[in-house]
Length: 137
View 1 (tube, rainbow, N blue to C red):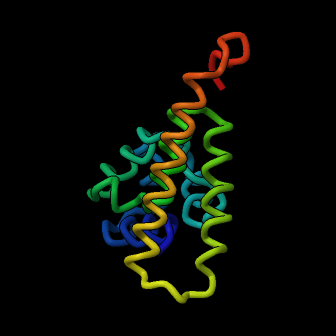
View 2 (cartoon, rainbow, N blue to C red):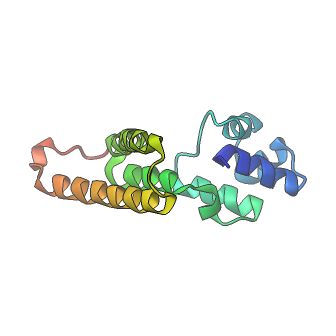
């Protein structure tokens, strides 16, 4: 189930309209519609938390492992980290397209690759001369 499908299902379980959910989290119903249609996603972990609280669900339910990885990369390494994480996920997902590996093995491999990416970004940031480091992205 996608992020948007989860929001829609939980909103309906509570008998809320898009307008009512939007009011609870401080956004317009257009934003809720965009979330539910998969056209946009919250930009911060705090926004996901607000949605989860409004829907009485755990924030981890709303975030897939991939979503959490991209969010963490953005928080730690800025926009470039986010884009790099998204690109990595797209490329690695393509490797699994044949479906010849067990699901549990694919999950473990993906987790290992994500951890390696974060570690490499941390090491790279540590060794980049200060004059080339951006203050915030």
